[in-house]
Image (cartoon, rainbow, N blue to C red; front, top):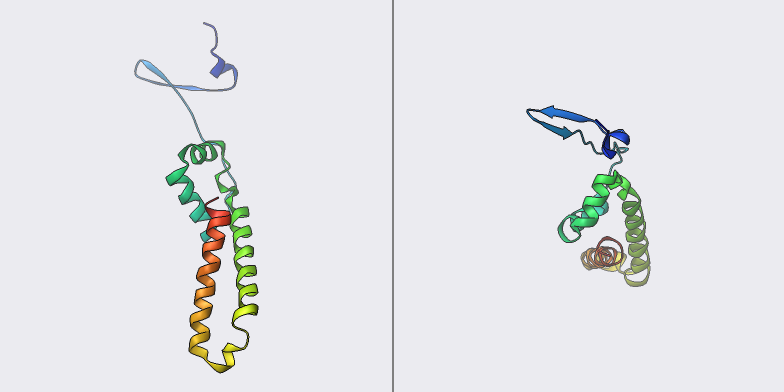
Length: 121
């Protein structure tokens, strides 16, 4: 009996009853910790771009989001530093409570910018 294309390419079958079931496995990927930004992007892909998520999962490139996580974190920190310099430099010594409120507002604004530019793009 002639080999199928699947068998010629190194695929193996497993017999279950009267059927031959192909033994399929996902390629092993290098484990990389994915931070909060990468997890947000993956959740976005799962929910709104299922085909892209499935393609990344089956090709073994799903953990490549450590780079997106690093980019988003660097952008977040740069935005916070830039906004702090322009908005709340003198306020810390004068009114600590208002300074804290403005700093929280700056963080929220920076988080929204990173989400729009990197995570949900």
